[in-house]
Each structure stands twice: as structure tokens, then as C-alpha cells.
Amino acid sequence: MRIFSGIQPTGQKHLGNYIGAIRQFVEGQDRGEAIYCIVDLHAITVPFRPDELRDNVLDTAAVLLAAGLEPERGRCILFRQSDVREHTELTWLLCAVTAHGDLNRMTQFKEKSAKQRELVSAGVFLYPVLQAADVLIYRAEEVPVGDDQRQHVELMRDVAQRFNERFGETLVVPRHRIPEVGARVMDLQSPEQKMSTTFGTEGGTLQIRDSDDEMRRKIRSAVTDSGREVTRGPGKEGISNLIEISAVLRGVSPEDVEREFAGAGYGDFKSAVAETVVEALAPIRERYLELVADRAGLERILADSADRARSMASGTLAEVRDRMGVGPPG
Ligand code: AMP
Ligand code: TRP
Image (cartoon, rainbow, N blue to C red):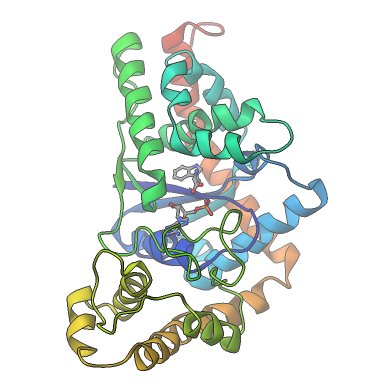
């Protein structure tokens, strides 16, 4: 089975990325042929600095390797999106079978364009078509993502289906893989919104590279409620979030966590969650700090993977062009 997912090289990767996506990427290496992509071309759809873009790509690569991706041992492919130019050509071809109205309805498009103070780029609008091309060009069957990408995966299914109906069976219609628990890790300071580097609060976003003490401080000062029960439920978004975080990182169910902390105070519960988080993320941070120093080594890994990705992508692109009557006969 072929698995594909992408991750943006913007800012610092946080606990939400780790729980919702990165953990699944690592585990995907055992379940199928896993292909992962650092999507620098998606990152340029919002304001960005050219001198930071390359660094951010290497930074994100180091986080993923530190978390357990092993492209050097052939357990996955990990490449930079812009290194495989076939993605951008397929994006344009897929625009022919993408409904303008569907793109207009995308929640992330609406949110991002409302928040953008300067130019609202056409890239923000076309973003989901590039994402569809990323997946469809590898004929991937499964797309591990967090909950916020549900709509984008729905859209790529529609695009693939419409292509196949119009031009003949060519593309694989992929399905999402969204974890049951932890698909939407919330901001620790503002638990009604998702944890996010761009839109979240500083104190409520737990970065993978935070020091142990910063992690402890952020968890201990997480916003909760005026109750005293360590249970999930309406009006208890903060505690529910901490329960889910703890459950996922310890590999138990949220009910197990509730049972374990029945009768405990919020203070004790938070301290326990803080230790769980530190235990999970500290080793990743340490490996990340070693890996990120070797820029040339990271570039080499990405380049090797890009060669492998390109050889898969070019076959699909040639077939799509041929089906559409684009270019000389194949
Ligand atoms: P991004 O950093 O936006 O490229 O997101 C990378 C992956 O992390 C995607 O699969 C997202 O769905 C996932 N993700 C981002 N934020 C969260 C969050 N707060 N909770 C769970 N998953 C998330
Ligand atoms: N849009 C995704 C995000 O912000 C990143 C992404 C780009 C992606 N291409 C992809 C995810 C293909 C899954 C499959 O998280």
C-alpha cells in the first residue's frame, strides 16, 4: 500500500503536528510504501522570506528524521516538493477538472484570505489543487493527516474521480487517515482553537524544540475550567485536550486517563501530563539539535529521495498528459 503526506516548512513544528501527523508518518513506514514531502511551494502562498524558506525546509526535515523517519535505510522517501517539478505541472492539468466553486468553499482558504492583511495570493486559492497533485501523482491510497486537512482530502478525491470519469481510469482515489484521538490538538492558552504556529498563541503552542522547562511551564499554565473533575466534556476543552494529549503519548485510551486521575486535582494532573510530554519530546529535540547542524547531510538525504520520487511521478504525469491530449502522442 502506498502512503503519502506533506508538511509545511513554516515556523516551528509543534505538539499538534507531532500528535496529529508526524507520529502517523513514522508508523506508516511499517504499514506500506511511505512517501513524505516538505511542501515549500505551499509555504509561498502566504507572506514568507526567501532567506528563511530553505532553512525552514532543512529544519522540518531534521524534525521528521529526529521523530523516526528513516529514508537513509530505505524505510520511506522524504523529499522537498519543489525538487520534483512534476507536481507543479500536474497542478495545472488538474485545474481543468477542479471546480472553482469547491475551492471557494474551502475553510482554510476562507480563513487565510480573511486574515491576510496584504495581498491575498492566487496561490492561497489554488493551494488544494497543488495538494491534490502531490498525492495523485504517486497514486497513493492513504493520506495520514490531522483533522484540519479532512476537506482538502475530500477535494482531491473529487478531482481524481472527475478526472477518471472524463479521461478514463488513470488516478487512484485516495482516502484520509485521521487519528481517532489527537486529530485536533488545541491551543493550551485558548483551547477552543487548534494549536497552530501561525494563528495560535505563543504560550499555548508547545514547540518540539522547547526546552524541558518551557514545556513544563506551558502545560502547567494551560487554561482549564472552574471544575475539578479530570474528565472530558463540554465546557472542559482545556482538560479534554490534556487528557487526549496524555492518552496518545502513553498509548492508552482517554477513558484510561480519566480513570487513573479520578479524584486527582488539576495541578497534579497537569504535572503528570507535563512529564509525559517531556518524556516523549525531549529525545526528539536532542536528536533534532544534532541533525539540524549538518545542513549538507540533510540536503543529501532530500536530494536522494527526490530522485526516487521523480522517477515515480514522471510516469503518472506522462499518462495524464497523454489522456488529456497534451503534447505529442506517447
Ligand atoms: P502543517 O504544519 O500545517 O503543514 O500541518 C502538518 C500536519 O499536522 C497536517 O497533517 C495537519 O493536519 C497536522 N496538524 C496541524 N495542526 C494540528 C493540530 N493542532 N492538531 C493535530 N494535527 C495538526
Ligand atoms: N496542506 C497540508 C497542511 O497544511 C500539507 C500538505 C501539502 C499535504 N500536500 C499534502 C498533506 C499532501 C497531505 C497530502 O498540513
